[in-house]
Image 1 (cartoon, rainbow, N blue to C red):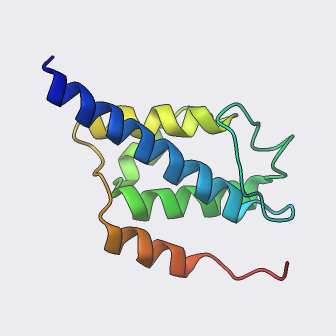
Image 2: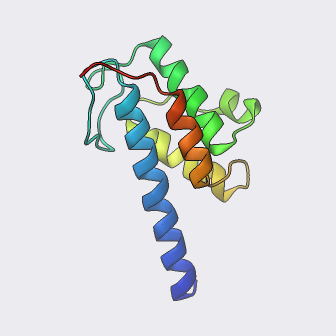
Length: 116
């Protein structure tokens, strides 16, 4: 792999992971998390129940352009890095897309406003 391609892959990795961590924090049913870590458990540490997990799944589907078959094939996601790794794998297979800034803005508008 050329140096330029490696830099692009690293940049994509950082971008996707940070977007997923931000969404996981924004949608957490617990008070807003600003610094979600990849090793945090969705249920135990971020307060996700099945309803919130479905909400997060729908937003990830919208943001990354997953088709419903991809979501149905997804393994159980326990920690944030599971979501990150799965999404990066689907992008590398051409089964998901890298979101544009307008995609990100549109999805952020779907996130319910919370009282701090």
